[in-house]
Image (cartoon, rainbow, N blue to C red; front, side, top):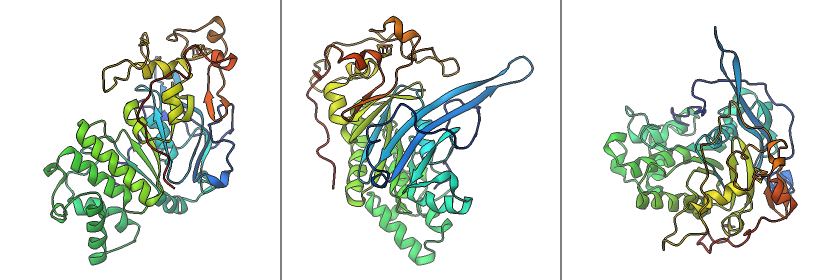
Amino acid sequence: MGSAASTNAATGSATDTNAGTGSVGGANAGINESNSAAAAMLRAVGLTKTFRVGGGLLRAERNVHAVTDVNLEFGAGRTIGIVGESGCGKSTLGRLLLRLLQPSAGRVEFDGVDLATLTPRDLRTARRNMQIVFQDPYASLNPRMRIGRIVGEGLEVHGVATGKELREQVLELMARVGLGADAYDRYPHEFSGGQRQRVGIARALALSPRFIVADEPVSALDVSIGAQILNLLMELQDERGLAYAFISHDLRVVEHVSHEVAVMYLGRIVEIAPAPEIYAGARHPYTRALLSAVPTVDGADRKQRVILGGDVPSPLDPPGGCAFHPRCPVAVARCRSEQPQLIDDAGHATACHLVADGPLPGSGSGPQVTRRDSPPT
Ligand code: SF4
């Protein structure tokens, strides 16, 4: 992995509280919880991350609950889109999945092995299977390194190839992502944003990973270039059976690439379902509000626009009960005191008291949208 594998916690200078693995499971079981562990390549079980912030002469230390009790399963050739507003914890979750951050509780299993039980050496080997594509294709590339070196760094570090063989493998990777051989000796600043993102993808592919966290991979690109990058990611998935955690705030992009969609709010998954179900019949009021704000190609509204008041509350001081209740247009008294559990209903899980009592009005009457065809085999 490149040098830019920073742990980009939303909390800035926060200190992480690595309590190691803790209690697992929990109520917010994801949609695939019923699948056997053997079927999943990567599993997150009760994944939780709390940062300690503040502390000093006049201020007591406080906890930031960045990610709470997340359960997900990633299978080969599948993409789970992880969406939510800025600060919802999705990037922190991505780094937890890769074990770039240590969880405060819960665990990440790869091929059934808890990554926390591995020695540093074995973890390093395991990480060859898990890579990341960053949002900012410029900031994530070392400006002083030539493209060939950037792409081949992982191969070299892990002793996979050297000399002529290394160069050949790097050129092959570059060709696969659409970069010409002339790029080998050039520097990142000589390329456009889209080309730099291709470099980032080639670097991520170098060690033949099976799982990739794509953290807002196209949000810094214009639409047409972003579409090319998305198509490239999907082609690579079909070719190599890659599993993606696709993190984005853009629901249109997520719709295009995802097989399942997990919606996060203040560190928790509040809805998770197959992508067609989310886009045609979202159940959680937050998901429905997000979808109502997505512009459509023909300008027609998906459904009546839901305006959410205010911003996402601070994870330093999350509201009691349902964390969404101060902004929820249909909140009832119970929402202020009782936290809803993520309840699975035939593969569509939602954390909302009202949904648990019966479908909200309008559920299932979502827009007809273009979405990805059936998953690759
Ligand atoms: Fe809204 Fe209450 Fe459902 Fe939370 S539990 S989303 S506040 S209705």
